[in-house]
Image (cartoon, rainbow, N blue to C red; front, top):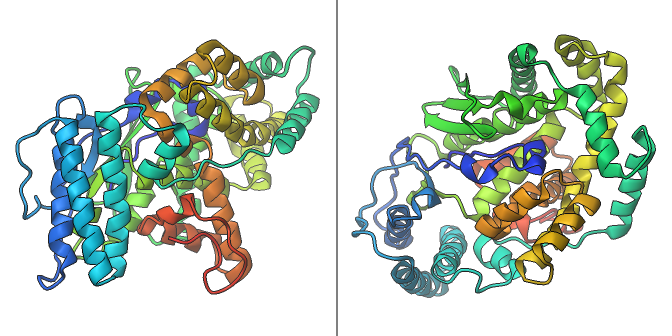
Length: 449
């Protein structure tokens, strides 16, 4: 479905120009075939045509991330402004609701979610900031803004403080501590390539990926962080600024998030799931601002932890990455325990971002809160990203925890392998994971689509 470009959670924390990482290359990959008798098909084609039209409106080209199919049977008209597109999207949504009420189908239900999100996106582009952060999250991304357990956040900060050497505030001590784990420039490629190989090996132990699949790595100082682009035919390109893997732990984060079992693998699973006919036309267009985007980012972040649980990650650091980076392996355990706490604190940014977006916190007050409560290293840059992307930031904060909760619930209730749960989730994006509460064990255990 889409070229999934993102920074890792570490890069997100540093911001590093995250907004520039989103590609808008259209990738023709497969041909969509649908039964002519399906009454949803013309509605789906109209949806795809409107979505493609959005990517042709000046100033909104990046909204269409990728296109996986032939041009729709209903051709996109000449680009107009967002307001006109919003009106057309709303009219199509009414038609889809009417058809779904007349003859409910699973495909119709999914198209209803997609078209509702698209209509809300078009309306938001036409009338920016009309909605609150929570309203935007629900309408555009089908995502519930999670409540933050402030007690848990305080405990994480206390544990982090106990692990960090030195005196003073946690932020300063964390910054000083991380400086001791910078990989020398001359070693960064070797460290990353070894991490990428390990992420691939661990993913292939659980997922059958197509023969000949590959990720070409290009090192480019002009890229803000890490930029993944799916080229089709089981081939991806990953462009990396060496600064994005400056810390030893970032090598695994970027490799697993962007490639295995992250974005590259997500595309492969999606194509396999679709079969020879390719994705349905409504699934062939991938929008940057969409529920599927948020889900994939969260799934990619969770995939890092799935591929390398803490104990195994520490062992890999000690045996492989730290020696390769020229660092003392004896320091790996504390380093990774600190990273776990820092990553878990990412969700603490959500209420601060929401309050800032809704005008309840000034820029300066929000920046201070992000630095103090969520340990964001470049808070002003993050707030600038929020100004531009709004509730899409949930993909880099809360979505990982939502995916994790869903996987854990499914494993507990059904005994299913967590890798299988994750594969199912991304092969046909289960965006309901982002909004449904975790359900008790039963026939629909976990989060539902």
